[in-house]
Image (cartoon, rainbow, N blue to C red; front, side):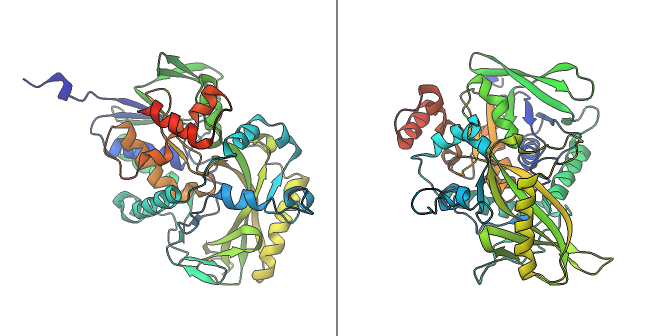
Length: 433
């Protein structure tokens, strides 16, 4: 007779978010279980409509320093010892603050969690190296056409770091979705996607989430999605989904700008430009014979009200946006010949106070986060999804999960602004034990 305790019952997993984090989590949940079912819930009409389509294309494990330690601190390049350069000289600063950031609750929450918190590059570097290995060695990833490897390293201040590469994250996400539907979709399949579904709220009972209330964006109707486990991997939308049930997610949307252009200048690697901007090769214009590049950079704090998302509305380029894009264009024209702008855009990076993503179980035993990747979401994507799936399935993890534990922020939310960052981290570990 087989012991009931040794029999693993089929589980239903619900993943919120159709970007790189959500798709790779869904992929690994299906790949590492034999019978489990996965439902992916996405508010847009298709996958990769948010940050996973507004990305600089960089696959850069070399950039493993905490962005919150270098760039954010760098803005306090004090002018006469009084004001940060982001305020006194916004046109030349890589980081900007809109006036709304001074009263934005997400920015204030982020700031309170940032103060006194140690900045550590080790978990960032480990996750990026792990993820790059998966992009290279996972057989099903190798079959995806996402322009991987157009860049042979990154040129930073005259030094070429050959660990780096580039790729099209949107192509990757769409290709991965097609693989999941082909192998696991259809009637009686293990995988399904619910699009145009916006999360209304999570319903809890005791220390578990029992269902998500979702609104159909086309019909305006409400329905429920139930499961045994829930993963919120919705980028800048994650905080709004979990904060009302008391889950700490002190991330902030940071607006970054993108300039896609063609040039007769040939560059076979990524390159760092002045003011912390980067350029990545994205292919060749077959008709014009010019090389296509994407420049990314700058960071603007102020909340997600700074622009519209995928929702079929015209993307607004306001006065502040115009100044940022003009700054980017000027820097590009100094290093590239015959520049012709193809597209101007922006996206919102979901940044954590220590620039280390939140991956793992929350205060609810069946609710997980996979968010807060900042500017490194493309490089960390594959590894984040696999680590999250291993934690959900109770498997041995390839990385130390304590580095990414979302509970490192929970004590501050539960007990108020008392104690140091280290003290809160210790409380969180005890709570998770």
